[in-house]
Picture 1 (cartoon, rainbow, N blue to C red):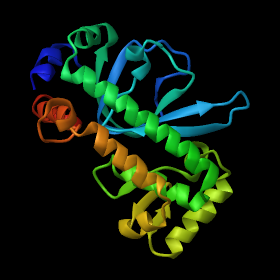
Picture 2 (picture 1 turned 180 degrees about the horizontal axis):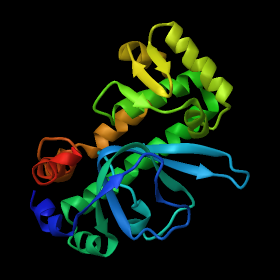
Picture 3 (picture 1 turned 90 degrees about the vertical axis):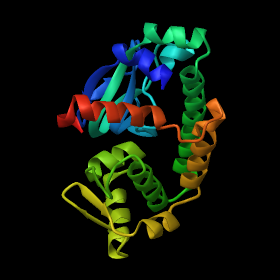
Picture 4 (picture 1 turned 30 degrees about the horizontal axis):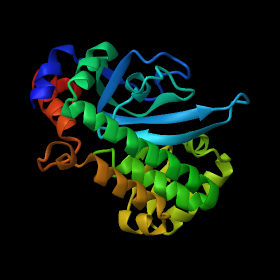
Length: 247
């Protein structure tokens, strides 16, 4: 809480509009973005225009890790998948947190390890598992970062994120719908039976979740009970009082 109060005057509320780019490839990252609601997709795009997602970030994480790892930029881009809002913090303001080895600085490094784990597991998943398994893993990962059992994404968007043909997404989603696991239409996916969706997913979803739980449990950083999202939850509570129209 003390870390949050110290940084509060420097936190700037910004909207996350669906489809907006938080940062482009090779952009110097001058801010960190702490999503309080919404999902940001991290994407790599080839010279031919083909793309693939390698990570998702919601209120459990931060956008802009290159800024505190010393690289300043990355060859990937961050695009808003599900609308929400975030708190933005200048990179130069964060330097003091690392100099004093604050709990926030340690938490950011642990989050980076979790992000690396997610990236590696998605690479394995895209290479070795069926499209239906990939789609289930992706749906579950999105649901974990949303307040409901519904998400908005067209087949074209999903295909671009998974790096596959749209027809493959159509077939995989059709099988899940025929089995009564989801309802999919007009770019909206409603999950009807999460347990069965998870049963059809590969092990990659569970592997990533275990690693996030292991690394981002707050007691690993401060010795206190609670989840990594404590800081973001505090932000959201404060946000509700100051800007109720945004929550």
